[in-house]
Image (cartoon, rainbow, N blue to C red; front, side, top):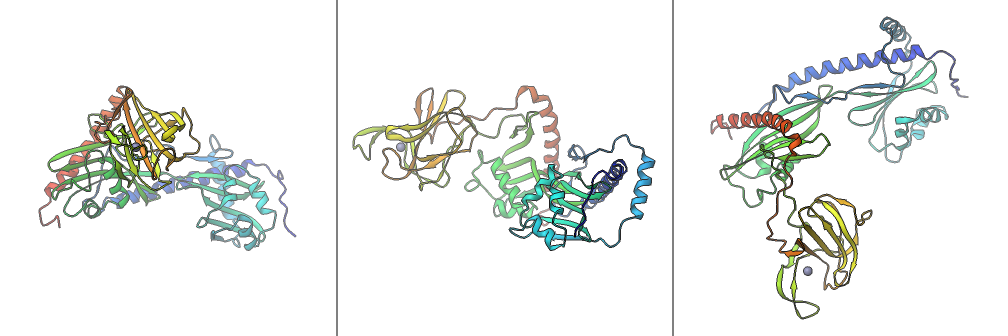
Length: 461
Ligand SMILES: [Zn+2]
């Protein structure tokens, strides 16, 4: 038979105090490790060096959240309770690490550990984040402590910062969520192009993901497939994220510079107080164009904009007021700019059509779709690059393709050659703040530049 836990046998207060202290100790220990980790970080080899000031900051919301909270409680009492608790930890109960296998549920795992059948129910009835244990994924790790057939403790990482911690207290199972502090640690690297952006980026210690992001940031201004030249240079300032002294992963690119055939481009990342993030020149101009040129990836132009074309089906001279892209049925079609859907439906020869109204009198049209993107309708707000539908041959079309039109104040323009305006610059309301941030980042880029320039040719190998 199993133990049935009876709630309310003893007052809850001492237990909460104990958890509070664990949290305080836990956090201060973590902070100590982080400090050491950062000192290790100073010794990073090669062209990398952590920045010493300004950008090095911890995420602001590291916090401990407990059901009862630990604020305003008597500290001596907490220590006494904690000491008593430390002396009474049962030796028999060991922590077991369980790596979840595909399809394994919590009850299967509990059964395998010999836990009583109602322990899963007692645990899940705690509610809140504990519910996440209902949907375990293969590869998740659980640390479980068992005494006889009772659950004494369990920890589970909710995400890279938060850990669910369950323990058995005087009133039965209790749960807290511990939030670890994550340090963001700015790093500068610089390099010169000799082979390719990928090879030389890796040589400068950049991960493939950061190299892709770098190419993306300058993608409107530099064609990295065509325009790169030996001797081009780059510098990148980016975050590295640390938890408990260990590197978690790379964060975002904060600033970047690319010198392409003597032309120097710079980008700084900026997030507005309302949460929109984009890259701007140090003067606050957007690096993004308001439109991307092509709404389908890897597609071939099968028919260009032509005001006197023989129509392939109607066999009459008819203006072709758009660009056709041949692509397989089902190929995603991306909105070329931010806007709002102004039409979605059938339009005779065009078949299934989506039209999007953008700012400044621009409207774009996407025709012959096989289907629309689910969940979108007239009035939906669309972001540049968002998928709005899929290539097909609905309407008058000989083969699957996208017919794409670009109109300014109702007049058809050649989508391939129409000058594309830049996206909006930094909002004047945020300009003062932008200038401060951007000044710090540009200084970091310049430090990286100087270091690269100071390397002798032999060092550059
Ligand atoms: Zn067409």
